[in-house]
Image: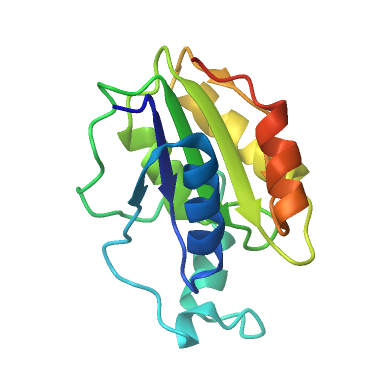
Length: 163
């Protein structure tokens, strides 16, 4: 059994493709994070201030979006990698819910985002805040935007994961 799990949320399929590449390179297990209510194309229209994703992303720091209770147990994993799109400069609010739900104590955590126009600094701060809110004792790696094979390879080489 591998000691790494890649969890991902992908509304359009872009993050799923990257997560599959990351899991393959790490010889990791992979699982999808499912929102309780799936996103429609209309929900994701960032040009409309009233769409679901826009409203969710503009919540205060403690904003959360419910996820299905179908995440795998972390008992057999030392490393957890979480992939997500970047919406409005940060992870979708359901990523905070995911972190709240998991017991990350003692784990090595790495996160990555997919975006064609945004860096990872605000997303990293968001992840760090959520880890702190949960009082987790976790080794958090520096995340990155993964939008090419070279970015994936470079980021994977930078990670400090348990062997």
